Amino acid sequence: MTIHINRPHGVNIDLLPSHDEHGTAAQIPAIAYGTGTVLRDRDVTDYVIQALETGFSHIDTAQMYNNESSVGAAIRESGLSREELYVTTKYSVGSIQESVHASLNKLGLKYVDLYLIHAPRFVEGNFDGAWREFEKIKHDGLARSIGVSNFNVEQLQYIVKVANVKPAVNQIEFHPYNYAEHKSLLAYSTKHGIITEAYSSLTPITKFPGGPVDAPVNAAAKRLGMTPTQVILSWVKAKGVVIVTFVYSL
Image 1 (tube, rainbow, N blue to C red):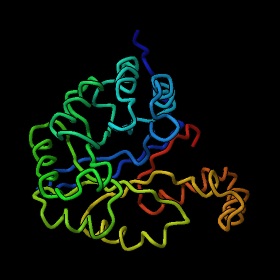
Image 2 (image 1 turned 135 degrees about the horizontal axis):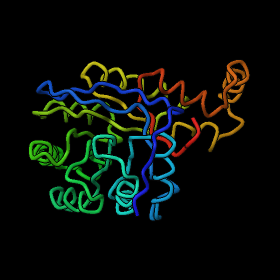
Image 3 (image 1 turned 60 degrees about the horizontal axis):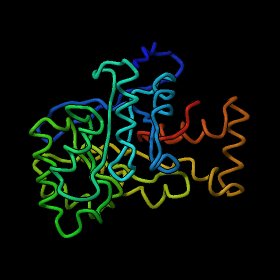
Image 4 (image 1 turned 90 degrees about the vertical axis):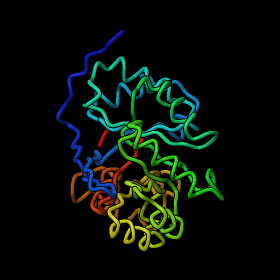
């Protein structure tokens, strides 16, 4: 069954420029619908279709989420063209080449827009070799952009040093409570043209309610006629960081 989605104008999805080492330009939608956390190991078909109906075009999944097949089902059922979508997935285990082909098969795609190393521990002791494999994936047209996730400054510096193609993205946990510790990472990424993506940005209000962020967030929400969720996500966006969220209503 194919559902033909008429894209609404309610979700403002800006595009952020990204450039690889050879100057090839790409654009990353500034907000992504994430299928991790509570959606891991679940059929996410209906969730992703609802996100696409809401106006999302960037869908973020991963090998370890064990839901790439249902993400692919949602993409097919949506009736949207490949050019209307931006799909990210991530490597975590096994042969990198076999893993990317397995992910593409599950997603029903010939390429992903962004392929990430999910965390440094998955390539520990083989940063050089792993990144060469990722560069091959890009060269072979299986991913339009390549990047990393959960890399700290030192790890990112190492990848940049050995890379022929620098990472387009570093996806990290990012919210007001860890902003200070990430300042140097954000500065380094900006200097080298690496886009930062943020997951778990709503941690202050979902996991640690009653903390010091609550008062200014609630005050801003009241003043601006926004929800606390909207205030925090607007703060992330203002930092030039791509948002990866499970929230539909923005």
